[in-house]
Image (cartoon, rainbow, N blue to C red; front, side):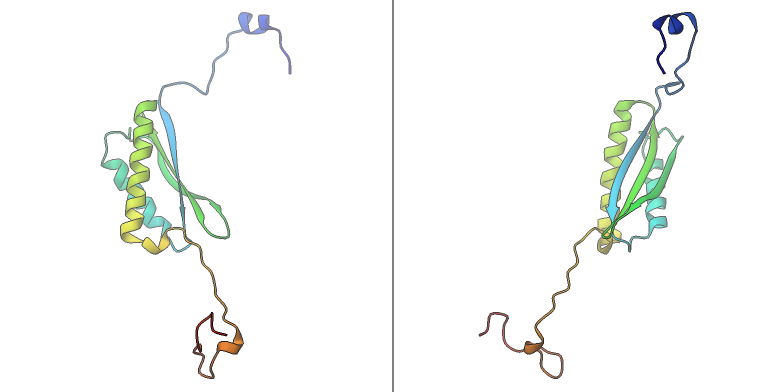
Length: 135
């Protein structure tokens, strides 16, 4: 739709996307499928309650994507202005990573590989014989 500029001059309008300077910030984390999402959600709330950077209005944690290797967790939070929002996002990201490292280290993203040894190197009891470089 194309409108002449006189339309906007003669008819008042309001930009509903900006009613205040409050901002929503997001932090994305990638975790293994073994991560207990409810525990991470509770930790996010504890982190937000422990800092004055959060304005106590909005928070949430959701699984927003799932790939063959990881889940994408999206932490949402609100702050009073962009400066506090940036600091809050950095604070939350650092604390959530630390929480996972300390409490659920196996839930951090990792690459898995199955190494299949040639059947010729297997003994009857399933153990391997010799080294992989043996002739």
